[in-house]
Image 1 (cartoon, helix red, strand yellow):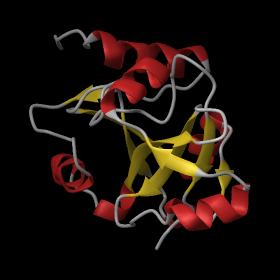
Image 2: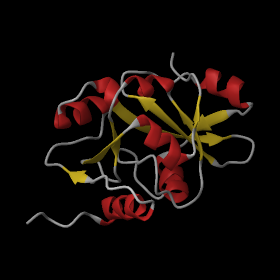
Image 3: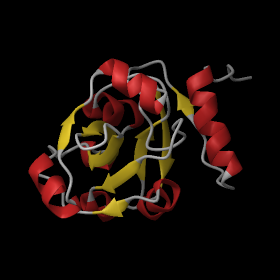
Length: 160
């Protein structure tokens, strides 16, 4: 019998179930805090890790989520030009207060409020990808098309 999920991961699992998906949140013994650790933990390439990075919209102080391939660095200028917004850094307190999760386990879904979301098109090169599920050692597997549906995110070029 498996251990029950921690509360943060359980929120992600309930969100997925509520949307009619049968994806399974997996809590692992190893860390998934970084894209490389996540890839090593599930045996995939780093490019298959969908890392969630929270920024702050400078105009209205709302969160902006960027879901990037683990192999890519995010170019905020590209996002700003494509979306017509100015991005600022989001510290740990902002992320927890506005998203509901701690940095290192931020999922692309199940936030405490609706979040403007931008998706890295490089994720579409893969049959399956892995995303954080609420803790620094939990993930779930999904397809890039499902990521777009679940997040209502916009695919834009975000990589450096």
